[in-house]
Structures are given as structure tokens and as C-alpha cells.
Image (cartoon, rainbow, N blue to C red; front, side, top):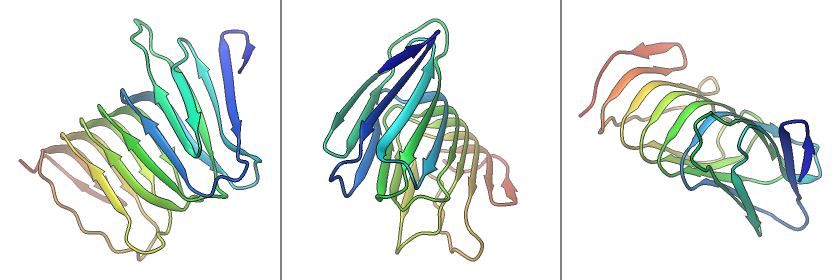
Length: 171
């Protein structure tokens, strides 16, 4: 980890990892997630404010936000050289994830989401994208002609899939 002013930068080498997993144990907020297919690292991150605890074991990157009065703003870049699973316990808020150049194996957000935009990649096979606990202002953008099946169980407000925008529903 290196410090530059109030920002903190973190990274871990890709090494022999063949599958990545990004896990947020206490949710994620004020975050941008991107992909770089040419970098030699498993991930790179930059945070402004109170830096979350980040641990790496094998191909699993675990991010644990700590309570703070001021929001932490961050960017995480994932290696596009390996497939990834992404999981957020306790939800996501104010997150933009551009995963177009990633092989996504699954996306699981429990605890709900608010102000979340995810640009999905072209899948290899069936990929489960799950947002549990309700959603407010959720946008999922998928590649053209990729089929989608949706089930709304916990309730949703302002859902957009591609250019189709839906009002409240579910429950």
C-alpha cells in the first residue's frame, strides 16, 4: 500500500491465480469498479478517505468497509485475465461497475442496492446476477441480444434493464 496525500493505493500480483473473487463483507458504497485486461496485478484499488480493510488470499480479494462519518470514495480495477465472481454482503450504494471486458461467473448482492449501475459482459454460458433485499435506482446494461430472465421478489423502485425502465414492482 502506498500513500499519496489522502489517497491510498493497494494492489496484489496476479501470479498463478486462475479465478478471482471480489467479496465485500460489509457492502460497498461510493465505488467505481472497472477492468483492465493488460495489467499484471490481480486487482488495483485507490481509496480517498477512510481506507477499508483489504485482504487477499489466493484469488479472493476481501474488502471490509469500516464505519465512518464521511464516505470513502474508491476505485477498484480487476484483472481481465481471469474470470471473476463478485459478492456484496449488506448491499451496494452509489456504485458504478463497468464489467464489459470481464469474464463474469456470477454477481450476488445481498442486503439490497441503491443507485447501482452495472454494465454486464457477454456471458460464457449462464451467469446468475442476483440482487436480494430490494433495489432502488438499479440499472443493468447487457450486451445486445443476450437473453435475460428476471424475477422480482423483494421489491424494486426505478429498475432499468438496457433502455427498458420499470417503476415500482415486486414483493
